[in-house]
Length: 129
Image (cartoon, rainbow, N blue to C red):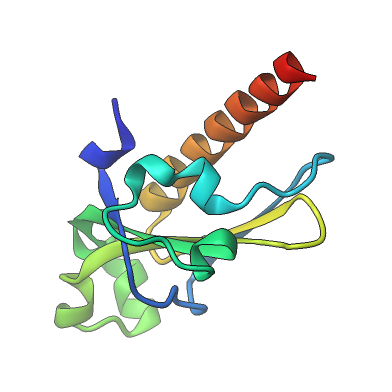
């Protein structure tokens, strides 16, 4: 399924605060995120989109987080009903990608999509080399 069915790219500044974080190291040169996710852009892509982008998912944190997790984190009802977001931040010097979110399902979807798009990009680059 197209990623656009699960989320949309956000145009605001990506959040640096998240409960779940994962770093993906690759041995390839970092790819600007607007090259990987250009199909998701709905407006003008700025310089920030080269190194950090966020996605807003069509489900809320309250839909996917267990109630005991929300209680431990002190998440209010209004926070739990806000849309789930996930962010990718890419290192400009290395092939390192940091993914972060407050919702594990959003992380899973974004990790899966990032890996798929990186493989596709690498395959295209290998074919043209």
